[in-house]
Image (cartoon, rainbow, N blue to C red):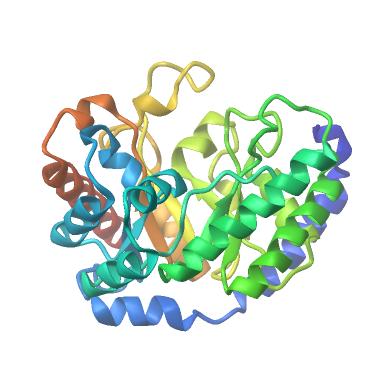
Length: 322
């Protein structure tokens, strides 16, 4: 897969893209969220989001998860499309859900979805684009701003041309324009397609769309072997949400899995350095706590949410001081 990219051309394009992105202004969305909740450390400019996977194992209703996110002190919530589908199937209204979220003082900065937009199989890709439209429509109805756009269905595929992938990502971006929702190209460290930050960034740049952006994840940077240095290339408009987590020293990155993610600061991820890079980039977006730890799923969900937020704030503050 890496042979498809001319390295000299890639990094020249990345540098140009980063320069442009670095000049972009902070969106009004982030500014309004800061006004609504001033609990972020002064000078950091970061906001905090709860990805509902963090308390998934407690098997709560979506309204209960929203209530917990608000009580714990988060600025936003990042739900999964599957649990929204369950909520609707059980008689819930998307309009009421959006009102509930807004009345709780939260925003929906991102929504986790898995449309198969990337595949060569035209029939599956067409269905994937329909699923993308469905997910973006749902996001729009609840006040959501973005959805995740990972390489769903292509985890084991090794021969996808990244230039073609970029064209397909642009098609999803164009669909998003009609809903006012932005798909974020997401990389998974365990995937053979879009497994690294450089690949996702290349796709975002080559999509040649003004709203193209990357959804990064601390765990997946480690799992895919990307390192953190490439984050310097993502300006304020290149990334609006970052999945926040930590990981232990063992097992090694090839063997580690999602369930071994831990609270920020409880592992060995270079989080303070990551926060310094983001701050230098002008990042004023959302750190979304995304964990899948079964031990946490056995604990009180409000305590889990509060613990994760407090640990994140401590590290962000330390990054300002160090």
